[in-house]
Image (cartoon, rainbow, N blue to C red; front, side, top):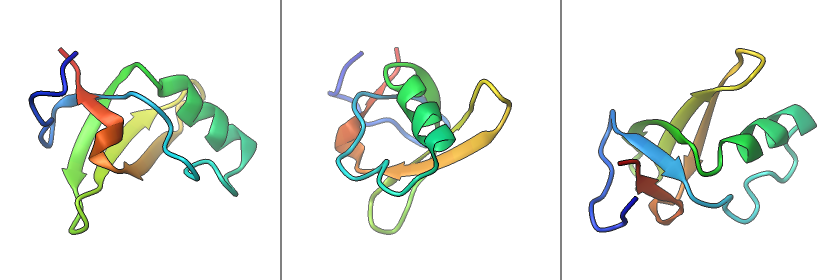
Length: 78
């Protein structure tokens, strides 16, 4: 993995850490699903107008999740 190249839409990205506050007020099953994908390749959908990366993944219960994070918390999966 490297941070020298910014992942682009459609790339496999890795959530390298959970951003502070991301899990606040989320149901326990969502918190668990997000924690389980840290360090694993997931799909980068796009960047929003504020520059946040939209990541999408399916958890072990086949529930699709979308999260938006600051790009400093992701890296390109290689």
